[in-house]
Image 1 (cartoon, rainbow, N blue to C red):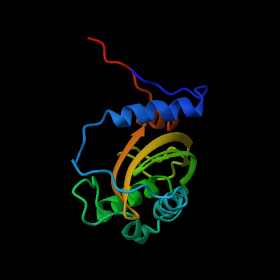
Image 2: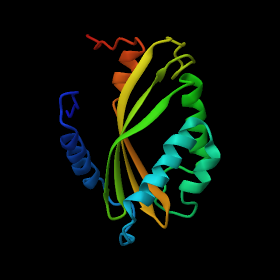
Image 3: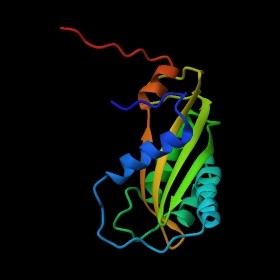
Image 4: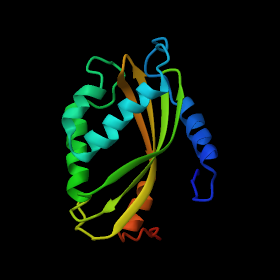
Length: 170
């Protein structure tokens, strides 16, 4: 079992996530696209986190590729995910803490925080504050995100909103 702990150095977390990401099976046999400048990647991620995840889901049309066979979620499905999460956490905030760019691959460690003031996964509002990290892995081509994977400790989120998980004994 792999567990990130707060005392783990950030570069170590990113290295571990990169190793995990590199071990994912290839979705496509396409050759990597040309490397994008870090500033252009930063602009794409800012548009994704600062605009789309803030509720301005029209930004998804600008950052997600529309014709990639690799894409795991279309703009409409991601807009629904954002709406559902924002209904549970109306003032949720995303802050990129670290970003690594290697040719067309991007790894971003993101700090997420907000208050659970709406229903979440069928659970009533707890009015508790949650703060967690997520590692997002992207493949970017021609100025758009063509593939996306996310690593999030969802059990930690449930713990923070007051859900106690105990093993079932027989």
